[in-house]
Image (cartoon, rainbow, N blue to C red; front, side):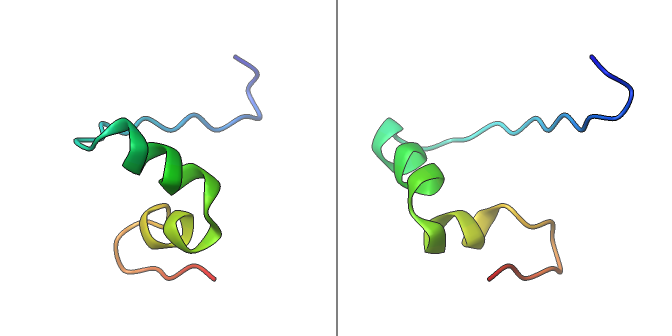
Length: 41
């Protein structure tokens, strides 16, 4: 891995349909990707 990269690891307890939606719909992605206490638009 390059020294200038970021690697994230998440364990998702959800159906494959929900995971797919979370990565393909902007509003769904914005609701879970920011860390606690942050907002995403």
